[in-house]
Amino acid sequence: MTADLRHHPALEAREESPMALVDAGHWATEWLWLEAARDRLVDALAAEGAQVEARVSTLPTDPWTFLVPTRTTEEPS
Picture (cartoon, rainbow, N blue to C red):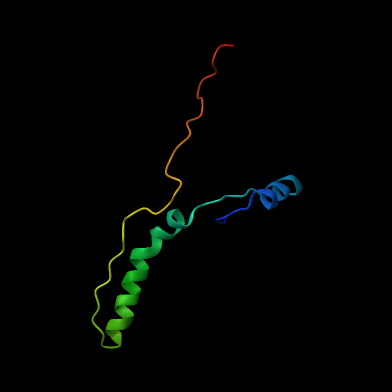
């Protein structure tokens, strides 16, 4: 899994290998662990005597926010 696949290298990889490619965006894959990272950072700084406040933004920054629906039933010809 990766983000930022480039068209031609991805196309060539698909043609040359049975491996699947997943192009997951940065925000979608990173926001899942940000609260845990914040907690570890705050705890590590507290252990050194520093008291900090840290917040995790919940604002999605992924530009791919649209959905292209697929047909679920076959349309008559």
